[in-house]
Image (cartoon, rainbow, N blue to C red; front, side, top):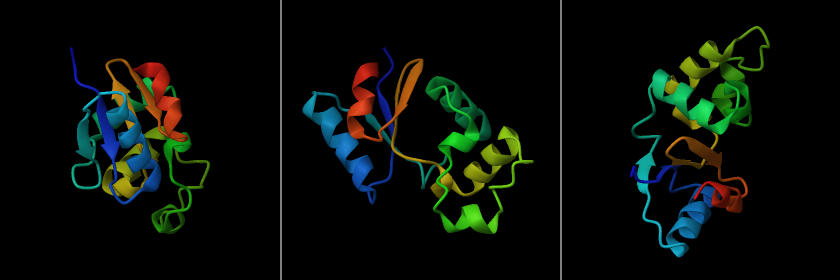
Amino acid sequence: MTAIQILHNPRCSKSRQTLALLEEKGIEPEIIKYLETPPSETELKVILTKLNMSARDLLRKGEEAYKTLNLKDTNLDDDDLIKAMVKQPKLIERPIVINQDKARLGRPPESVLDIL
């Protein structure tokens, strides 16, 4: 069985809360500090499929890079947005918990419970 993974940013309170929730349930997930080791374009596409989300849904729209790269431009497709997230991983909403073929965004942290 594949270990449960969390794309984690230790500086993010929701990310820390989600990790604590997993640990309370006796789960020791593989912690991926995605700002240090961002997913590749292929990995991000797989994660989006598991989340059942579009790339635009996963963007952190409050980030400075969102504004400077003009990512609100509706002419940009998922591939364009995925490339931007791979180059600027802080654009990726967090935390993401992955359990085999399912994934959930930990916003709120309890939303990950239905894939455990």
